[in-house]
Image (cartoon, rainbow, N blue to C red):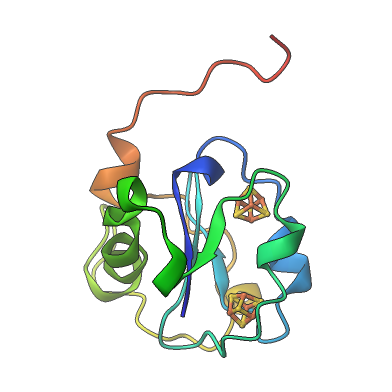
Length: 116
Ligand code: SF4
Ligand code: SF4
């Protein structure tokens, strides 16, 4: 499976979403998340991310390892304001913007404006 890491936070430009053939990249609030139950390991998303925030699970840097579990947490736990886990809904397009993040992502400090 492929993993979205911290670099996506507050960038969220959705380039990867447009390139995923199975629509398994979901939009939280401040970041996107790859559904490990739906990702087919095609690798199409990795090179298109402008901030190199996507990596194959075996190549996630040591300081980003927490995001391997965190992508799972987004789908397998009950997120704030929801009554059940997202699980594997079969495509981000049908779900739309989820609008909430995992506790790990939500707790990260806001990124400064990209214009600086
Ligand atoms: S590796 Fe392929 S299937 Fe998995 S998230 Fe990336 S584009 Fe989608
Ligand atoms: S392309 Fe990169 S920065 Fe943009 S939404 Fe996907 S993971 Fe996030």
